[in-house]
Image (cartoon, rainbow, N blue to C red; front, side, top):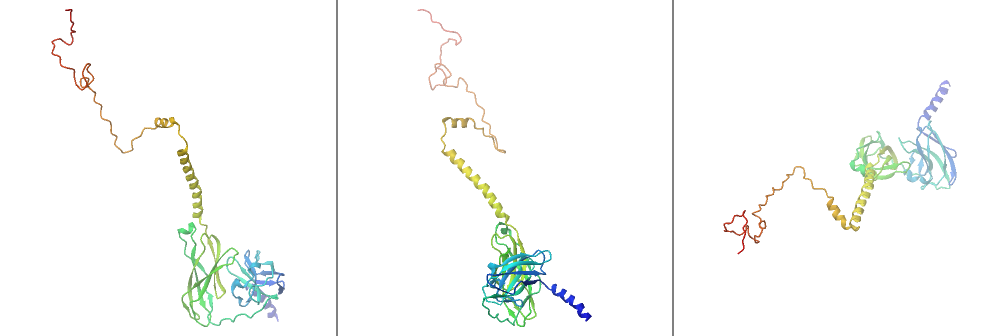
Length: 346
């Protein structure tokens, strides 16, 4: 009896520490109503998403992922410092038949999820698809993103990485060329899934490293969450912080500076060509023109010295000389050029 009383508190503590827990104020509600969803055991200050999903049980999870949930009526909530929360959730009919659950999952950070059974009154119920008894994949190591983006990503090119993780076959049959789905989600938005096939064979009990390419849209920046799932079950999630493409911002800044400057130069050239010119403007421009300076390193040629013209060589320097002669006509008179000749009266 004493041992039983001692084991009871230990069992309760182990159950509380097993993982996150979700509780509902009512296990049955009709579409259009609402109920209170509370939880505990979550990480502190963590953003959670609350959804009503069909084709799901707490044991098998949500078959088909968020495609089986009423995403338009979901609610988001942030846990407190102790990892607890409480939030009103409208009851909506999921796009697939029940059995239904209230699915609570983390939006960012390490993946964690929990389900609580909910009966949606008036919604059809259908049996779940048979669970495959063959091969089953499980993540054996933490996922990581490797690689780096090139210079073009700084100018808005799509960022790309490689998602690396190790999987093991925990089933009883061989898995050949498994088809994974890789999705990237920004903020609270649902991920966009792309098919990525891994070529290889996994025998029961064996493991292998899987590398899947991940690429975002052009100009993407901010906090993203990369998820990988197999057969509708999410295997792992990895956060990815993408930097802002500052090259695009620099391009627009330069464009805003260069285009106005070019338009100003074109406008001034048009105005200078169209406006009428005054008559004295050209003369003033030629008068104020600066002398041309010699270029550095060029030879300066000085003008040749001017040769003075001799009076006897100039054609018009001697009075009385006819045009075209170099000197005056020869005079054979004995009269001295310095003595004037006087002619007396006859």
